[in-house]
Structures are given as C-alpha cells and as structure tokens.
Length: 129
Image (tube, rainbow, N blue to C red; front, side):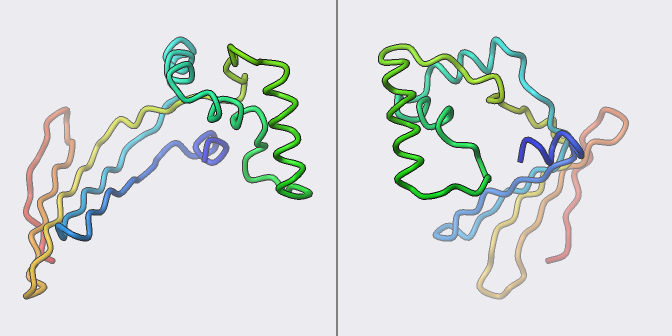
C-alpha cells in the first residue's frame, strides 16, 4: 500500500460491522506521518511484530515460510531487546474529505448519510440507498 500511496495519495477505507449492519467509508488524501510519530508507534508494537517488520519484505515473493522464519531469527539475534524502526517502515495519516455512514435495513431502504468537505465546511447529505 505504501508504494501505491506514493504514486497516488487519494485513498478510501471502509469499516464494516456485519452484526450491526453498519459501515463507515472514509475518502481522503494520505500523507506520511513524521518520523518521530512513526518511531513512537513502532516502539509501542509487540516485539515479534517489530521483528516481523524487518524480516518481511512485504508483498515480495519468498522462497518459503521456513526462509522467512530463519530471517526473523537472525534479526531477533541481532536485536534481542531493542528493535529499531526499519527505514522503510512508517505510518500514514488520512485527511478525510468525504465520510459516509451506512445503516442497513431489512427493507433494503438503508440509511446513508454523507459528509463532504466543500470550501472548508462539512456538507451533510442524505443519499438514496
């Protein structure tokens, strides 16, 4: 995702709760977090997740799961206590310009409420299902 955002920063994310028949969709522009914030968040993650961030070459083809585990073991041996944040690892912040709330209904006459940023003001609209 990071590479894709680097080429095109406009993103959308959806949070869906099927048991509640609710969904929130957020659209906006992603921007990289400052290094200090990425460092703080990385340090808060579990030790094994920090090792995994170094061991995984995310989305690249790997030889085997065994090779991935061996790479993780080497990194854990190198950093037994404090795992620094890899230079390629960082967070993103999404600055929203559109937020839609969806509430499902058995009749399929769902509620859809949309907030759209226009001229620095949020405009609220009800959308047809």
